Amino acid sequence: MTDKKIFPKSLSILFSIFLPGLGQVFQRKYRSGFSFFIAFSTSFAVTLWYGKPVWFIIPAVIWAWNIWDVISLPKGKSLVIPLLLWLIMAYGIGGQVTEFDLKSLITNASRSKDMVAQMFKLDFVQPRAEKMEGYVDIQSPCSDFPPAADNESDGTRVYVVQTCANVGEVITVKGEGFWPNQLTTFYWQNPIGGKGMATEATSDASGNVTLEWKVLSIVHTTAPDPTIPQIHRIKVSQSRPIGGLELSAVGGYIVQGIYETLALAFLSTIIGAIFAIPFGFLAARNLMTANPVSAIIYLLVRSALNIVRSIEALIMAIIFVIIVGLGPFPGMIALTVHTTAALG
Image (cartoon, rainbow, N blue to C red):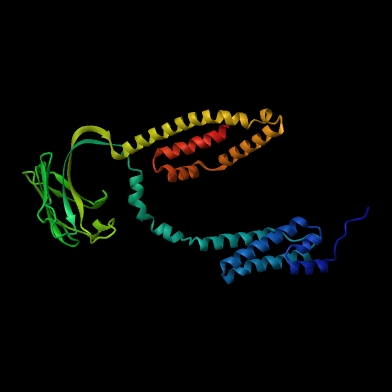
């Protein structure tokens, strides 16, 4: 039995100069040759894409190491150095592309303090409180004949001395019939219900409260044309504790979310299981491969179920949101479809 032919080392060196890894292949060092080829080609391609000439040092060193490896055959050189160089290039270019800035992350971490504190704030419940509220509608910007900015409701009266408000002007908002000596919150609500401004004042001993308020341009951020007069609303609110605890707004959202999640899971599982029964029979190999027609049906149904199963439920939910709109319903449809495919 004769040994497999080995090319002369000088010829293998020329091959390695021409294409990294080729010399190792001709010397029957397939794993080494493949490793050098992948390391050089990927590092060269990434460096060429990134466009920074300094990084061409990495593929150049891998190319030179590949030649040295062929010269050192049959023992060869270790692949650790090319691997480390490739990792340095990958993480180095990756860090520059992603603009990695550890210093900024550390020095500016304090900016997120308030947000993080709110995330860990235990406000599932809050002290029970009674509220007294009033409001007044006001036109902004002013038209030639603005409506009166005066409103009475539930024993309170809120009015604005000026009949309308332009950006930059200071308006005088007055409230009557509120609780005396209580902190009072004023909200400016734009025509679509968003809060544009907010501030506070304290009512006097008679339950009257007065606020001098400068109108900021933020109140018109939702208007397609801020020069068109629109009706805004100024809400005035007081709150005082009456003892005991109640669900906060956050707590209410959490309870509602838990209920919706359980309802989605229950309904989608039940409905999906019912829909999966006929598909389960059609996708059963032992039942549907007796003749060519049923075998084709089996392949089609099984392929369709596999495709649907491979689609993330969240992606399907996004599609159904486009079809039926926002809310829990598109989520239930998506989970039902995914459950049907998983059980079928």
